[in-house]
Length: 502
Image 1 (spheres, helix red, strand yellow):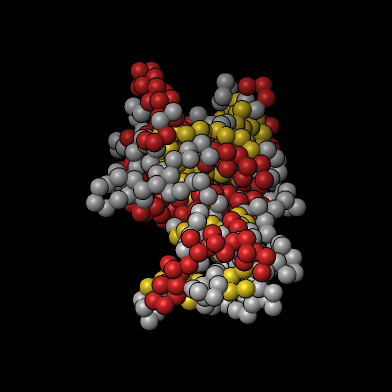
Image 2 (image 1 turned 135 degrees about the horizontal axis):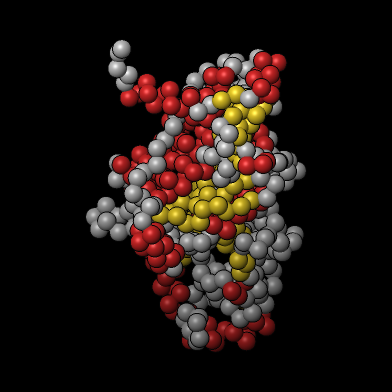
């Protein structure tokens, strides 16, 4: 008699434990379900606790109820989440990941890790990155149509464990100072992992997330609670040296469609700029447009964040390729935030709100603008290309009361009642009365005023030039596009309205 191999013996052992009761056989025959399906379901399927101490296995579009005490099949039926015959577990077996042995078995190791995590949470300057993963766990994520996975949610957890944690750890691209938080999105948002160090313990936790016993997709999927929760997690570390990443996984249209998800994510991106990378991944068939996810990406990108949208085919390898790219993108962000010479982290400013790319200057003043009127504004300069230097613009304001002496804004002609200093021809007065009251102060150069002789020398040397100026009132707004800071200046037209820009 030929000797059996170990593999053959193991396979027979698995299958020999499956016995069918009369009721179970009858139901399988009625519904065209083969016994081999139950054998595969016990080995590969999604396992859940059922009533009366029984277990429920879902695999290949079929739900089995199994009694572990009697080791008998009780009943079975076709799952409402079954896929087409051309996808899912009907086509290919799922990718099974083994836990890292020794990573979380020792009480001492668990305790040491908990202490490290607690200390790191309060030492935010040591964080090198923080990734917030938002995973759609609505009922549609139970659908069994992803080749290489048992359902859509299983494909996400598998790819995150393997490609966002395991591979970077093996490549030494991640360490325990790279933190990961996970938000589960249903009707509400729940943080299931908070600021976990990237290590093998986390890898094992993500593998556990694959099982429906741990997390089962159900109910609607509302985006807004998840976005708000993600913002609160990203705000945990306002240190500009920590790279941030937001990953958003969903398989369709949000249940809360009336909410302004795009605008909300724009506010988030305006706060963090290039320090934040945003990636949305849509997992569904080709008929889904993912308009909301694409809009979120476009809005985040317009505020300087590194943003991308990925739509993998319903295949585990395709999803893995996208997540591997995201892991590399985070590594690139961390590298860009590191000084080449010193190796120290660069700090991204957190005290300003980024301006949206392509945004025209506001037609009306808002709280973002700082306004300065007349006496609050000092001297104006303009670049002189012939001198290759700045020259001062002639000041047409009254040297006594600081009113504009010109006939109109943008003009260099004086009003009929205005007076020019006859000695230096570089100081104006709005009336003869102001000239009498302020002429002596101007001549002597009292207070902040230049003396008449000093102004005359500057006029003769060409250090002061007479050019039209729109107004002596202006507003300033600090704009940030990505990593660039720019101050925008707008003159205010006082002839029409004190709030309207020229």
